[in-house]
Length: 354
Image (cartoon, rainbow, N blue to C red):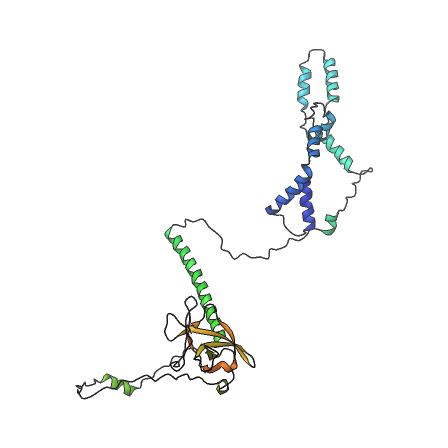
């Protein structure tokens, strides 16, 4: 029917592919569009005699094709009926002969008729027709290239303790893996932006000689301290102070990733108080530099963080008055990264709010 034609047409247009359950809907759609038209539906009622009603629409000739498949009538039944009829034996024989002549042909006779029809006129079998299927052969099925890595499911009760623990462990491992990847990515981006290279810590092995071991084993006598003795407190070394200088006095030319001190005047009037900002150089030209400014951290003192949102500004090289050392960076992506400079900013006036 129309459905078979749709399937055959799809196979012809897609050689080597397999028909799945997902194609059935499209095949049925094509068949229904052709078979369920109003004209075909009305013709079906009319041809079968349903409407308008016609009980003589089918004749005996319409059922002749099913004759070879009808069950063979036993010969004993006709003989029994003849023997029960009263009359002379000659009459019975005549009637029996008449019944035998008008009986339906047997299956063997029908088979012979079918064989004669399929054979040629001289009794030799007719040559078969070679269609496109015999010439081009059967197409090869395509192998599936997509391999599913998803584990196969199984029946379980997820509220049981072993199953619940296994599900929790899988989710925890997935979450930790994702968080670890995000931390590593943030660290790489930060290192690339600041130019800082993380050095691997090397462990030094301390070798203790045998003489020192003997000295350690011996008890050390303790002496009473004299009240006149005083202990001197060791003061930490002061941090180097930052002093503004001109751009011509910088030790070298500015490069991308440098941390600088930028002069910002509160007013264009002569003698106005100068404020300073800290920033990181993103790019430079012959006369200007693009700087991303930092501000004082609200949570940690003596540390700076990137402005949120970032404050980017193109400044003149003449306003760059100091080149700062590389800071030590700490913090997390969620809380923010903190920059700590090992310098003293007491001699400079930082801009309010920064």
